[in-house]
Length: 226
Figure 1: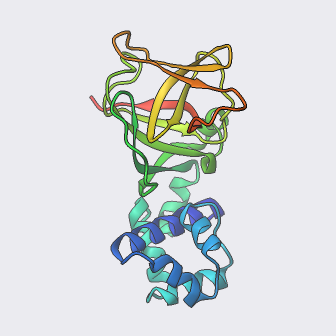
Figure 2: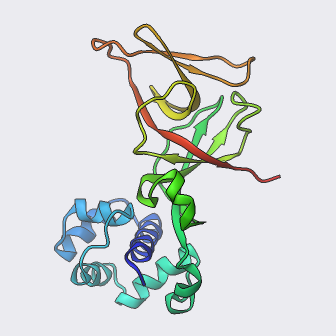
């Protein structure tokens, strides 16, 4: 089992367990296992695997043996036996899909819950970025037709946050998360829709602006089910 697989398995296991238990389970687990909430957060997000000692203490605090704990994560991402899957999956990396809808018209705010992990060939990441920087979202609405359709899935690189004119970005505007093309006017960023019948957003980029705005990342790929 390589480090990347282990991080994904741990993230999937913790996401599954915490979703089934009362709020506050993560904090209690951190306390009972002698670790910190930040370590728990990093493991749940797939950013760290921690030490083996820490992993075993977390499993024990949650009421599992170490192998039972790992099996929950393996099943969540479809690796039912790492020993059997390791050879076949070595050329693949996994990207987290979160429970969020990026608005292309109707917009909802992400709560960050992991829905699953999706496999891509590792050669693909040379173009779009490393797996830890990537996240998958579903899109709702028709404002980006014909480029992006309702219920498409987009892959966003969350480290690519420098806006480039004409490119597609996932952007938070107030309590909305939208996918738009970025253009610039004096002291203003214009978030344009591809659908001429849909509206655009204009966001002040003046240093004194108090507008609630942030760039989530650049859209690097989209998937569609026909």
